[in-house]
Length: 133
Image (cartoon, rainbow, N blue to C red; front, side):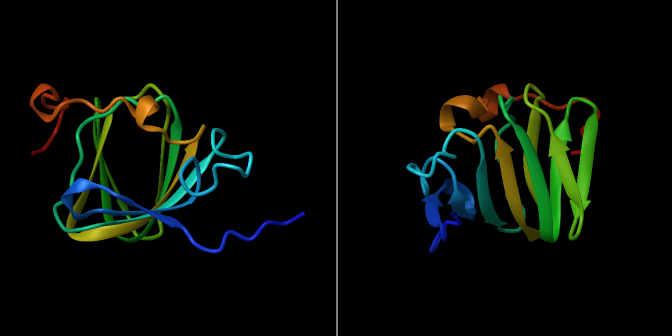
């Protein structure tokens, strides 16, 4: 039977980024999906970035507006509105956004969890090979 999810849950994060989780451990803990998938809408302000991470999950990032930057050990990808980036579990990556900020949808398989993202401390992150910054 179809299930309507009335609204997402806003998850507070530092740096001015907004996360609205539609499906996942926070918003739908009893839906039977909390560990298999998470779906969230993100709004990141201009210049936002997060530490490097090596998540255990695959992530599909659908860019709605702006530019999402994905640093990885081989360089950097730029995904613009209408484009999608797929990262695989076990890859060391860092998400940030361009000067206009970005709005995007993140789908994580299995679901995102703080224990499975493995974020690095900023001071220990180092530079990514080929990083232009």
